[in-house]
Image 1 (spheres, helix red, strand yellow):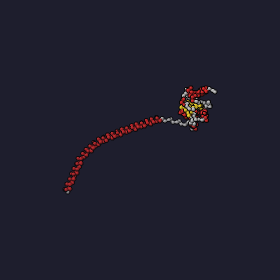
Image 2 (tube, rainbow, N blue to C red; image 1 turned 45 degrees about the vertical axis):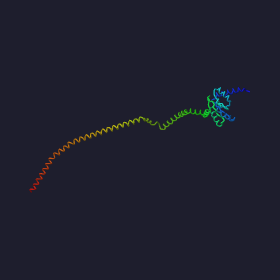
Image 3 (spheres, helix red, strand yellow; image 1 turned 90 degrees about the horizontal axis):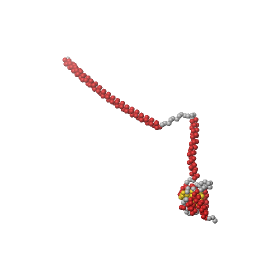
Image 4 (cartoon, rainbow, N blue to C red; image 1 turned 90 degrees about the vertical axis):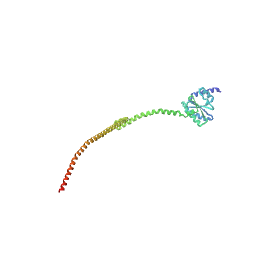
Length: 276
């Protein structure tokens, strides 16, 4: 019979090496799972590079101590370790896919309990394993990354294809029109136009104001001239009135003489009548 101690040493060495080489290790408790269920879980993990192994807790605890990691809190009850190593094609295992397989299997098989594990050599709890399971698989992430990297190149290629095509369309349109048309009008400087319009408005306002001022001055001068003329007319009319009064005074004796002669003639006629 082989030496049991040597077997245990070999198991400790194997577990230590796997702990050091695996990108992720998930510790699970498989109490109540049948052999058939465990075989089904192993088959589901294999394409993603997962390897499901059952070890004694004492040996795993010793191997973890040799590897410098602490798994004591998770090593209770029937324990199995899931290592993320290589796929059957020789590629690196996908941690996210391994976590997804364990999470989905635990949903349909409640006897499988995820306790935690290691990720990139650091301890991780059960919530951390579930968070890894929620991440999109590596193939999907790589496809998205490739799409992001290819998008600028595709845009550049489309632009390079559009330039000669647009040039050809423009040239054909020019040929169809029979040559170059009239030169396009120069662009209108909006700011200069607005400034010119503002200056013109200001100048018009100033001109109107000057015209109103000149008209007001002319009206005032005309009013002053009219007032002066009225004064002079009044002054000229005064001597004329005095002359009229003098003429009337001079005519009064003549009127009195005429009245006297008329009275005398009347008296003579009366006397002649009486004598007759």
